[in-house]
Each structure stands twice: as C-alpha cells, then as structure tokens.
Length: 223
Image (cartoon, rainbow, N blue to C red):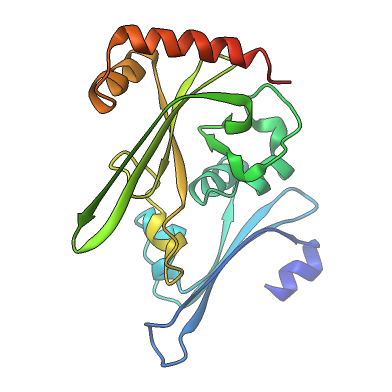
C-alpha cells in the first residue's frame, strides 16, 4: 500500500476504524477500511480483517487478513452510501448526486440514498412517534419521525431500534461502541406516509391533511 501511495500519489478520502476487543487476543485488534483516490481518479480500498468488512457483506470471502480492492466510481459511491459516509460523499462526489444544491450546515443531518440527498435541515417534521419497551431483556426506544421536503418527498428518520431501520451495516458500525443512536432514512410515497400516519400514529386522514398543510406552509420559511 505504501508503494501504491508513493507511485500513484494516492490520498485517503475515507477511513473507518474500529477496535474489537473480543477477537484473537486479550488486547484486541485494530480493524480498518481505508479508501484511497489517486490523481488519475482510481480508487483503492484497503481492508484489514476481511471477514468483518464491506466485502463480507457483499458475499465475497477472502482468507487473507488484509487485502486491497480496486473499485470504480459507482462502486465507491455504493460503498460510501453503505458506510453512511455522508461527509465524504458531499466533499468528493457532490456533482454525482441528485439534489437541490445548498450549503450543508450539518452533514450529520444529511442522508444519501441512491445518489439522492435528504437533508433534515431542509425539511419539515409532520409527526414524531416513539415507543419504549423491553426487548430481549433490554430497554429499547423506537423512534420514527415523518418529514416532508421542498420537493414534496416524504421520508421517515429512524433510529436503530425502529423496526423500519434499514441500514444493514449497523452491526459493523456500532461494534464495541455501544452506540444505539445511528440513524437512517426511509423514503416514502404520500400513500405510504398516510398509511404510516393512520396505523402508526393511530390518527385520521383529516388530521394528516391538516398537519401536511401546516408543513407546506413552514417549508416556505426555509432558506
């Protein structure tokens, strides 16, 4: 990898490091995935501990403890979306995204799905749903919040305890950190949003339409 960095002047554009104290030794091992980009716009992913990697999630099993994978631009974007690496995508690939370009105040409030940007700071909340209960002996709190943005798109902002949580990389991102706040976005049609409202909130279509009109009015106040 050092030779690749020196010869092709590869630079790190994304790095995911975590430590797993339960594997291989008392002190644990450092796991990492590092994405490099060369001046020729070539991309290389350095993966240590390959069985806990993006490749393993793709069904590609490598026996070596470390490997380098060459990716094309589309594969890189898929990888960064999968890793919820919003900051890296906005920094290096903003021209490849479908969005109404604006200054991103808080990248942590942005989510990217299928090359589309969903920014909570540019949307209005219609309703919040939470429910606390015990599951497998642990207290969990489901959190789902319905938003609408300027384009008229509905999406639900969820935390990992929600049954609607769709980020399959949760285990790897939260490993050993005991982080339970990792969030995700679930895009909905208006019909799906209405069904969520009626069934999840246990409310009426009339109330949904009332809050929707308020939200559309509030959208006009967003710069």
